Image (cartoon, rainbow, N blue to C red; front, side):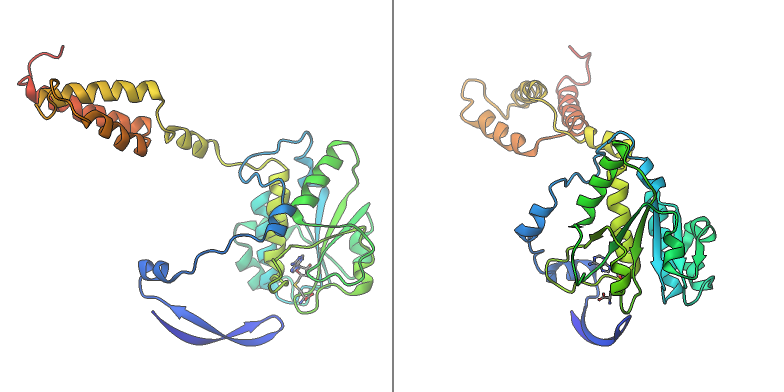
Length: 312
Ligand code: SAH
């Protein structure tokens, strides 16, 4: 492994970074530091860590139709496209742009990928109040809120609560505000918000790329709205579950019989062999598929022992 200094063009100016370069994946993995555990304070803030399991709140789906993502004076058109893509991935559709520097733009379309429809439907407003005119609730996403006089939540807490509120019939169109890449939201813009969302970064650099921030919020809103792992994956996982103990006992009986057949095991002097094999196979927790293979191997050994005569 070797390294190289790389100049990174950043939204807030250039900076130099040292990048470790590996030639193969195993090499890169061997150098990777241990992932440090999540700080306890952050873990404690995220009580509903139900990745992939739908929370199935009644009416939660409509949260997706109730939200408008508002980007205030976005500077990079590529970010607008990336935001549209992040939204579409999780089912958000309504995008509003307040005085974008460059839009429409080829970079926006390129970064939107399959979310061209969300981009095409995006509405452009000259001022923030115009973008919020028909919204009952305004929520600002901010890396570093300054004067906090309204409730502050993590995206997970907020999305869960918003879904619950909506299910309880407390509706009203809600705007989710995101600020400019370089300077974020101005104080007067933050003051329009009824509540704030902060993505906790564990005390490290608190400022995410604009589209990354939209991505995190979209993900949490998607989960709170019932997004779950596809059925196919859940079924595959079920197939990988270890077989039950009754099946393991049938296997041990079969194994013992085959080993007596090959004379590896002397039933007069069995010693500790079966106990040791039980310990060995017990550790492997075979799935139904793997158990079929093991049983098939034993049957093939018995077939040879019988000279391929009729099975008992
Ligand atoms: N340089 C700006 C950040 C701009 S990032 C600053 O320091 O304030 C662009 C936008 O992404 C922000 O205005 C905010 O809406 C969102 N964002 C970035 N990081 C975030 C975080 N940690 N929590 C919540 N929103 C964040």
